[in-house]
Length: 96
Length: 139
Image (cartoon, rainbow over all chains, first blue to last red; front, side):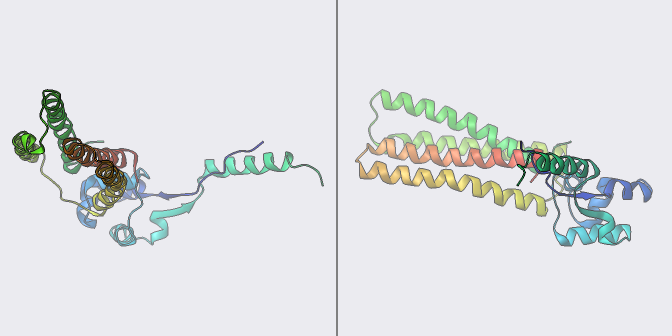
């Protein structure tokens, strides 16, 4: 039996950071980093991974390190899924 | 998610291209079945269709730009453009090969010209549809 491997993805905390910066709007953030509001929306929703330059500009606006804005790897749900997948593949392996 | 000016621009191009060139191909098919055998006979129709399309696209863009101010293009718009162009280039490539094959097998000139035009329009449709999918579903 095989279970699909969870794909790691880039996650971000932009929505939270905007909230902690006086409910900064997507439009205001977009104007500061030099992209359109739709692009900020796409980044926030995980539909677009920005260039390094834009990523650094976002971190600069919120005055935090890049790692606090973007994280790479499995989400909590994906970690559970991956753990189940490993257990299933171990149990279905034939004994040597 | 509210559509950006760029996305609206793609919709304008796609809809006007399908409607106007759809009309062109219907009229051209009727002309062909009525006995038109020279490419030059289709030129006035083709020119008027191209002019009509330019006028429609320009007017529609002006109306949309007045309704919602364009924000300009950024890196995401450019990346979407490049990927969509890459998808469309496959269709155009197949069209060129089909054109060469038609010439090699001595197909009627009217058919060759319209085959090339059909592939050109199809590649533009693929480009526009790709862009819309990338805008909606992400890259």
